[in-house]
Length: 148
Image 1: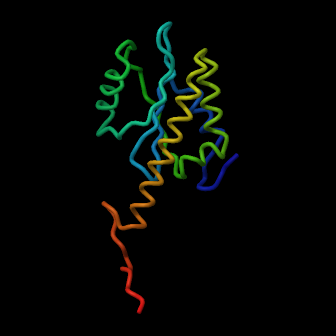
Image 2 (image 1 turned 90 degrees about the vertical axis):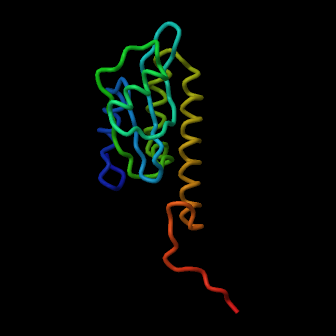
Image 3 (image 1 turned 180 degrees about the vertical axis):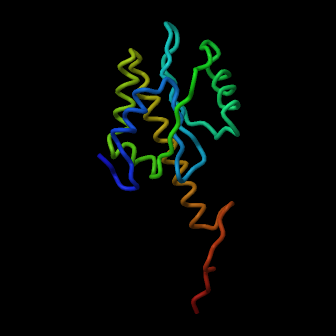
């Protein structure tokens, strides 16, 4: 099943299901969604909006700082989501991810997922507002003219 832009939703579900640690990149914001499914008797999964890393080594180091009780993962799976973050929810992928995390035995993870989605949607809104208002990193192609 696909939803525009050639997105294979079944493949995205497979990546979500297979990943011990997952990074989702978004088209409108440089912020990333970090999902770490690893758990212990003391710590549940981690769902967090994080800044981009310069390279894979930096991502592994930052993950070790955030999760010092866990060994470094063998790999971090990543994919780019070419639509708005809320489209993940509209496509059912956000609920799929949240459900898989809650099934690990940490029901409070659902709130982490909700907060991460809220943050991503807000980040995207801020980028869109900056684009409209010629904010930092944007330039107006057609400057406003005074109507007399």
